[in-house]
Length: 252
Length: 302
Image (cartoon, rainbow over all chains, first blue to last red; front, top):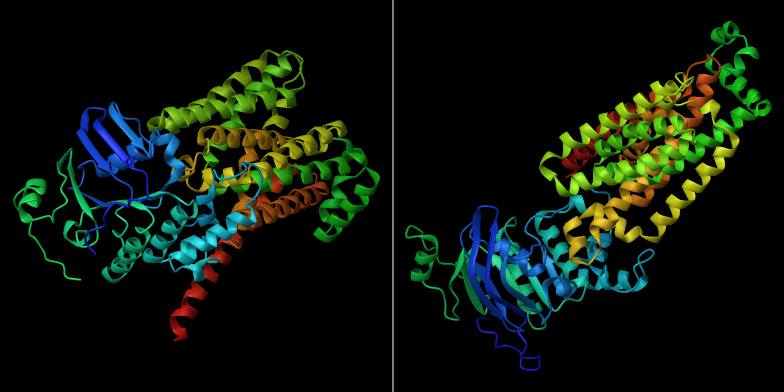
């Protein structure tokens, strides 16, 4: 499953378009003149060294940060306008694990911003939450407390939360950083299925592993150093990480 | 105090606890001020259960403490200018909630320093006003430690209105409050106005503080705001369940505190807090033992 051709029935408008983007946190410049266009239906893997600006680029695309220069359009809108059309799976859960809440309630939070603002959860939201849990094969966890899940289970639940809002784009930040390799393969197989209807942008540091799944790899180290559709070879990795990276072959 | 003339102290000291409580119940039938006090405690418990749960799960007890203490500024100013101190407290609490919220949102790096400073500045302003108000020096103690026996009946209506406001606001925006308490970043992505609801939550904390000041005074507020919800959190794992149990526990602690303190003529507020604190410690030990026992059972089950 290497090449996914962009879906022809979707509009030709780019799903995500980043133009000449630069961003600094105070003194340190994190992103420099980044251009990236993702067409609907693609599965793009964003790789690069730690502190290379991967998470920052995601936060900009999600509208959590404002760029200093350059432009970002998501589905033809500004990032903040489009945020509800994106499903986001963070690298680290940004909530306390001991929070008194069930898996089902967490997933239903993915429905916020759909329908009326007032009142409790509606039946439609509960149904959507259960559908999303079913899709990630975690329906049996619905009544469990969020703090009682293992790393792999939590990752599936966070994916379900992102899917519950019926997004058009799925953005994942290191989705497999805290889980073992067998589960990692499961998660990627699931993503490959979801890619049949969703555009996916995925951040990973494990370049060799994801290259078997994604349709394209974008390499980011402050600036976008490679942006090809070809398989990533040793040369690009050396260019990206420096010369002393050992290439470990993954076989699936 | 009124009841000193009715009930000689030395007799009640020698009776057992059961007798003290039964004496409280017979006095409750006779004295309207005791009925008012009991109702005031129950009304305050609703705020302490519903909002205390948010304070505990969102871990904003320090901010709630800041809001509670700086309220003295508003109460002092209200006394000085001859306005109802409760109204002054409400205004000061909301102002202080918004200030502390702004500090948390804008100066994240020095959050604790600045909240600590606001805490003390509010109290300093209050003490200066009270010092310059003729004839009110004795009221300072009841602001600080509460005097539930002196709650006027008309203030029950004020407390009930505040409760109603709290419950309606939380019920209408329950999903938003849950979302910003659980995961601010995700709430923001789903288009929830996080800053607005964060400040609104702090304002609800401010209202609750004013409710509780009637009962235990502003120094002890923080215990009644956090302990019932924290005890509930030992046993239930849903926000709604915590709110219900914390409300019931709050009612139990205030009523029991009132009953126990009546006979020996102890101040009611500190008695309530000691009961709540004692139950918390026992509950923490018990739930810890329960968790260990469950883990041990699970480990040896196979």
